[in-house]
Image (cartoon, rainbow, N blue to C red; front, side):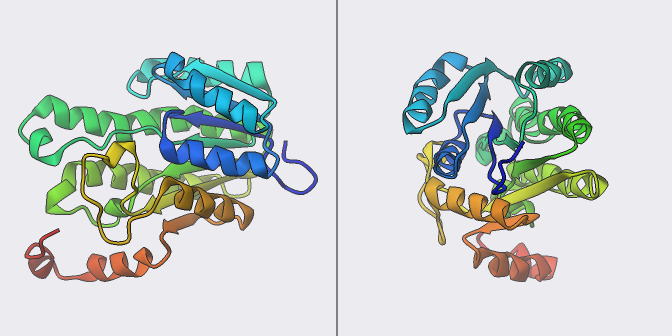
Amino acid sequence: MKNSLGAVQSVLVLGGDSDIAFATLRELICARTRTIILAGRSPERLEARAADLRELGATSVEVTHFDGADTGSHEAFVDQVFSHNGDVDLVFVAFGTLGSQMEDELDRERTLTVIQSNYVGAVSVLIPIAAALKHQGHGTIVVMSTVAAERPRRSNYIYGSSKAGIDWFAQGLGDALKGSGVNVMIVRPGFVKSKMTSHMEDAPLAATPEEVAQAIVAGLRRNHEMVWVPGKIRWVMSVLRHLPRAIFRRLNL
């Protein structure tokens, strides 16, 4: 349960190895978050981050196994987390894969891996998470999307379409949960300088994980449903979204 000042007390992170999630947790700890559950495919890799979070002031940091691609395990995973830990104020859905457009579009299995991770896996776990939060009567779900979800481009249509799917699912889920005490916030960053993009050149309006984290925490404080990082990229994408397709496809994007 949030404290008397409305601060998040407990957080479940799906994709605990995410640079953005880790930066967000650091911000939340400064705002008095104390209980954290880091979930990922390699719990042993999360132990160092768990130790860092304890040193920053978190009193309880648990590391557990979660595989976004293993949809058959998701209901049991959510049941176990909520039965063992009680109320969870915030669930951060931060797992996914960027893939490589040039390689993925030549390999059916690689394409399906991106879709499975970013869309199917996220939908699969969001369904029981939403039910658990609705049952407890409160909570917030943060879903990591991307500006690429606004209008997938030739250079990233596999990744972009998978993120567009989960983005729109999350919007509908937020509408369905209205009045239940559960909120959904979607985060749409542009290019983020992180380990996921370390092999790529920086794009215009690039942000750091810390900048995204600050925007997320500000969005939580203001009960926003959509957060753009940086804020001005919202207007850039609005222009691109409304361009006629014949013009859009000529752009080197």
